[in-house]
Every structure is written in C-alpha cells, then in structure tokens.
Image (cartoon, rainbow, N blue to C red; front, top):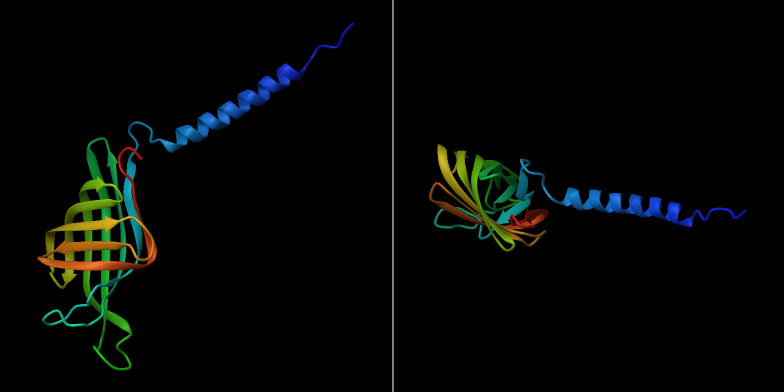
Length: 176
C-alpha cells in the first residue's frame, strides 16, 4: 500500500496562509468606508524667513507647529497649532533665548486641497499676540518633507514664510 502524498495538502495550507496574510496587509492600506482618511499631518520646529519686527526687521522667530487634516466622506476636520517665540532682546547675549510668546494660533481645519506634495489647509482659529482675535480665518500651505520643507501661514492679514528645521510634514492625496 502506498503512503498518501501529503505535499499538496501542506502546500495548500501554506498557500492559504500566505494569501490571507497578503489580503490582510493590502486591506490595511486602504481606509474602510466610514473611516476618516488622513490627508496631511505633521509637526516640528520652524524658523520664519527674515524674522519679524518693525518694518520687517530682523528679530528671529522660532515656531513649533503641529497639524492634521482628515476627510471622512465629504467632511474635512483637523487641528492646527502654531506657537511663535521670539527672544526678549533683539541683539546681544540673550538674543538666542526664545522665551517670549509672540503669537499663538490654535484652530480647527475645515477644508483642504491637495496638489501633488502640497496641501492647503483652511479653517478658523483663535489667535493671541500678533493678529489676536477669535474666529479668525487662516490658511496654511505646507509642502511634504523633512527639514528644509516650507510652509506659509496666513492669518489676520499677516503672512509667515517658514522653513522646517526639525520634524516632518506629510501630505497624501485622496487616492494615496
């Protein structure tokens, strides 16, 4: 009597397990219907190009930024935070100590447009310091990448061009 050949049975089990693992990993790449899909997020430390001051002076400004924007169906939601610090004195020994809160923007993201590696987030914010106010519209344009990436914040009639020093910005389109 011949012993049954068991290779196909074992092979089929291995093939089935491999298929299930593959299907599970592919499914996790795509958002399930009804789940929010992150389109832009990031955070880090930036420096404002040219600084700020009277007449566009050269007082350096360091910011800490954090944001995320997601879409669930047709609804966009998210948060935006930006804390801008300046030194207490413009020159001299303490001019590198960023201890003064010049501006704080905290807002809700209500809209987003993605074009390639750039996202434009729009929303309403509460701002203290420069441009202070409540329910202030803001626009934050961010380019994907790590240190050296750029962003532009516009709020209260002020525009800040920023360069990322530490951290990362992620941008994904609806089809990514």
